[in-house]
Amino acid sequence: MMSLSYGQPVVLSDLDAFKEIIEDKKSALVFKSGDVKSLANIINNSFDSPKLLENIGLNGLELMKEKYNWKEIGKQTRDAYYKINYFYKK
Image 1: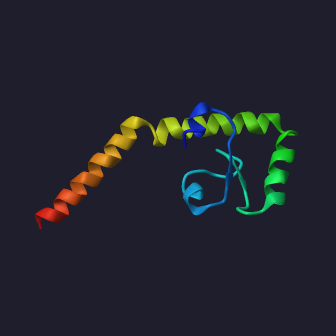
Image 2: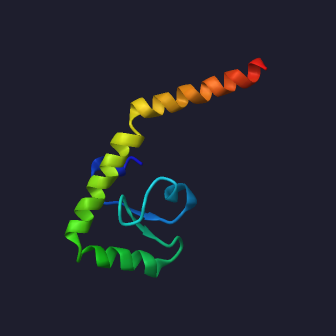
């Protein structure tokens, strides 16, 4: 997540935790986890697409600004505490 906030293209594996946050070729480049050839293909092909890399970096930054900024994280944390408090009051 920190990498996305720098506005640079990010390469991630297809682990479920990452797939919940990003979209392949939109906010990051995704390779098949544990597959060295998949990672190599992503890296090699990215050199031929500088505009795609630029867009991925900008989209990742925008995702962080809109959905994962500190204000939004604070709201989500507050809501989680409210839910916990609600269940303990029952």
